[in-house]
Amino acid sequence: MRNVKVFESVTLDGYFTSEDGDYSWAHEGVAPDPEFDAFTNDNASGDGELAFGRVTYGLMEAFWPTEEAAKQMPAVAEGMNRMPKYVFSRSLDEVSWANTTILKGDPADEIRKLKAAPGADIVIMGSGTIVSQLTQAGLIDEYQFIVVPVVIGKGRTLFDGVTNKANLELVDSRTFKNGKVSLRYARNS
Image 1 (cartoon, rainbow, N blue to C red):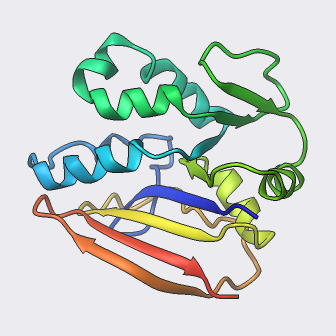
Image 2 (spheres, one colour):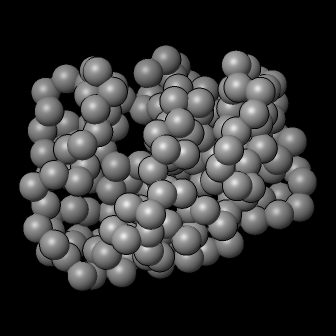
């Protein structure tokens, strides 16, 4: 059975986006860091599959297939465009980003089917509503957070609506010179 993982940037005060959906804080005011860039490129070079909610998918689809993305972050753009992708949406009927499948059913049911099918691990990016639903259902095997050294005061947490306790075990941490910290947790059954 394959694993479902979450990869999220979060603020020091625990938000993945501001109240109005802005996440520019994840990229602003951070000094260049070749080690962090290599880490990002390495993450994008894998053979995983990606999953998004409709809103996050729209943001990703608008950027990663562009020439600007290829110029700014060529290795990441290549990986994002190459990997199989799933978008949870009841309203989309077609998409233009290569290698994308629309999943119209309940996210927990769809993820159960994907976990049982052969293939690579699935990484959910952004998509706070999906993350909270799958956390509530106990379907996420690993969480990787990039903690960005910024405080925004108000925003959305990834775990809005979660009422079931999720015990996690720290399996890896890494600090970068740009002040970002990677924390990787596995679900502790």
